[in-house]
Length: 179
Image (cartoon, rainbow, N blue to C red; front, top):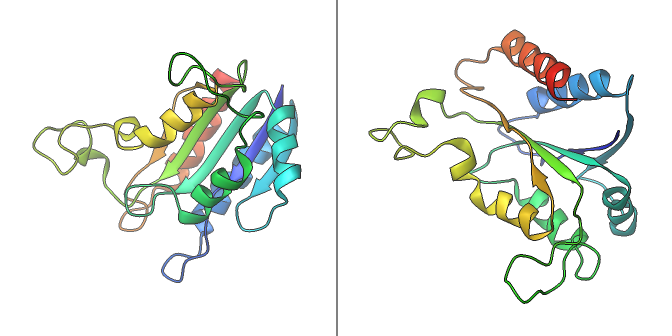
């Protein structure tokens, strides 16, 4: 399988990205032995090269921290610049059906300072919504381009109560079962 691993971390003074880079490197280590892997970073890229990587890949994995309940700004800019009309999507008679990246899949792997218990609980902060509900705009962007969603990975309470061994094991188990 041909896999594109996108590091969506954006430099930030408060968090230096150690966890994000660690998870990204765990994924790379697990994947490169059995798959053909290319790497991308939203901090430094060439638009044409990135478009070609998406065309090449069967599976795209996005690893990023959540900033203000959404993707980092540079990941959004990356998508704005890379996802080109007539290469990623076109207009169709039915809105949202013009995706040109069909037969490709994606995985989200996200880190949150929000604790896990604030999801899927109607009395908590996210009003009963799960991680995928909160990130609906990202998922709809991928669907608009024709990509199919695989199970999302999300790691919680990463600043106040990090559980690195658990996060690492979760990634290893996921890739053993799913890839």
